[in-house]
Amino acid sequence: MSQYSKDLNCVNCPFKLSLFQHLSKEELTYLDENRYEVHFNTGETIFKQGGALTHIASLTRGLFKIYLEDKNKNNLLLRLLKPTELVGGPGFMVDSRHHFSVTALENSTVCFVDIKAFEEIIRQNSDFALQFIGYLNAIHINIYDKLISLTHKNMHGRVADTLIYLSKNIYESSNFETPLSRQDLADLSSLAKESFIRILKEFKDSGMIHFEGNSFHIKNHEALQKISQIS
Amino acid sequence: MSQYSKDLNCVNCPFKLSLFQHLSKEELTYLDENRYEVHFNTGETIFKQGGALTHIASLTRGLFKIYLEDKNKNNLLLRLLKPTELVGGPGFMVDSRHHFSVTALENSTVCFVDIKAFEEIIRQNSDFALQFIGYLNAIHINIYDKLISLTHKNMHGRVADTLIYLSKNIYESSNFETPLSRQDLADLSSLAKESFIRILKEFKDSGMIHFEGNSFHIKNHEALQKISQIS
DNA sequence: ATACTCACATGATATATATCATGCATGAAT
DNA sequence: ATTCATGCATGATATATATCATGTGAGTAT
Image (tube, rainbow over all chains, first blue to last red; front, side, top):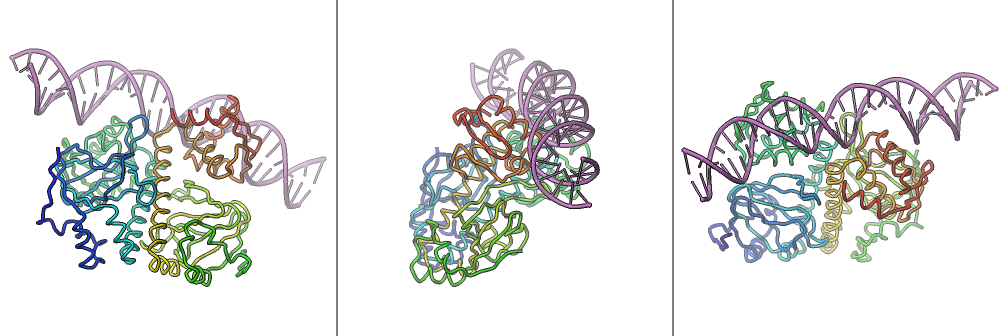
């Protein structure tokens, strides 16, 4: 399924993150010795909820979705992961299990770092430890926004939030083509697929956005923002 | 409003936490020199969302609610805080702001530790840093449960989850009296107050629980668990 | 004693959202 | 070429949930 390789051309792969800029040459070398690269095809899973947490991952190419699976096989899509982002897993220093699943939306390349090596670096470098705590807290803050969006906003506000998220945080453009299905987009908004599609059509009819298949164009960001606010 | 005191009888106050057991005598003394104790009356606020994060707090006596405030002044109650728990704030190492509010539900005593002193301890003691990361991650995992409960469960399941949370995590008893108002309980379940009251009555009529005012008795834990599961 | 809050409670109604059924494309398999 | 599966779309309907109006009782002030 996946190609394993220790690609030396990618020696800098996990180090592009600002998080890693506080490490010494020795520490980077140590991490380099305890990492390996894997290629994933669309639809393949890199972390499975409930599985053992043995590595953290840095995405070097492609796109992933991070999502929670509930007992009824309904997914709640937490966020997308794009290069060059880290995905650790909150089971670190807790129960060494994964608490969400991560799967590839495109053909992607991932750099895995052994969790024990990562722990060792945190132990050695207190600056890095503090930066990592900041990184965890930033994610934490984003979840609060998501909680408010999903529990206190109506359908229109949630769809607006999803479109804003994709445009601003992921694609950084008013035009984007996404491999996310309508079901994925609905899971990102905690809506039924049909409901999401309906609101999307409303937004299109009102002229705020345009889309054709999976190509989207945000025509009026302010209007979307306003809907996100009032809903 | 509040009585400030440096109570030497409470010299051990923030150190009861398992988190602090990895610290040396010198480190504990250092923290002790940078902490102070405050008494709060019911309804008073210790952290205000948006305010500056200058201290972390350890609750030594009483009960607090931690909640998010949205633009429409609706609250989402995240969790309760009881002795002896720590409340940091995810703004630490991010933007030095509070991202939730914390107010007293009873007359309470809080121990504040200067955030810079806390940071210094993390910097000095890597074991402590790792334990703290574990502490943050455990909270993170709980938020995932809350996300699933609030977005993927119906009213019955959410009320059941709230009752289970109070009985199991907070009061550790099938019988408890709580200072939480019906509105608080609804905010904890992301429901309208009236909806919460109705489900509560249903549960009472079916014999699963009993309550009178704010005194609750969980008569059938298994039934509640089942409702939490299937809903 | 009377008025006045305020939290809790409950019925009636409105609204938001999900579900069900169906159709329509597109691409893959036979 | 025909069938088949799959994702997108849309209308009709059912259900879940919020809102509105109102009532009741306990505590407090006048």
